[in-house]
Image (tube, rainbow, N blue to C red; front, side, top):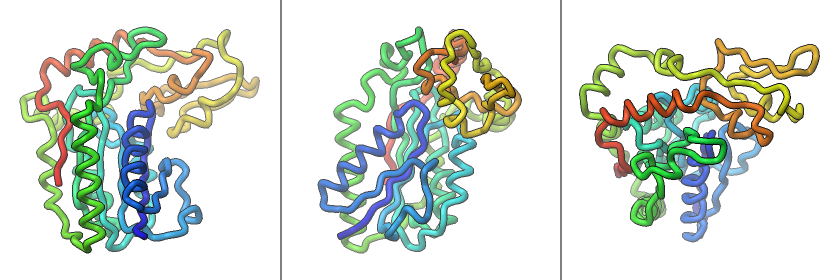
Length: 284
């Protein structure tokens, strides 16, 4: 029986959905599959050396999320395992994140057989319960479509068969570079702006003490340790080290955390008007 390890990092559950899809596809092929959040990965938890490693992350500010990158770099070596990488994004700007994921796994001894950039509903909120990706097709409403799910299933099945047949010759990972936006916006932003510059344009997380029930889920959720507790057991947000991933807002069931979503959506719409090639793409 072939064995697969599916690792993911998620903030809005978009990436989890795609990772779970890979798990289901491989299990239906008779594989043993371990699905795990990068945050929970521990070498002692893994009782086998995978024949196939699948890794997926969302795109944050056109990059691998800082926290996810740190977790990936702590992974052990997976010598001669086959690999497939994917990113999820809200159809705002295409990027080279699959390429950089592939390079990270190559440094772990993984042989890259393919990669993908997969459109999903954008997670910026229009109101307390509705994301822009829930209502606007251009920002991923309805993604992944039936067609894209079908393509994804076919790609995972084909890669699984290659591994079963011992056909683990790598693709040229430079092909994954071609997924990024091919226009003036991409060229200028990638050349002249650092990820911190892009991130700092976005508004800070806001805390409403009156709504807070002190469950402290946000503290354990924050991968940058930007949320801590004061001596009075109240939430404190360090705006300097906050990475603006807004994962804490997703996790707060009491709506005690929020941000100025209208500013975020303003920037999302501006960038989207200039972007090109922002659709699901598979490279195998």
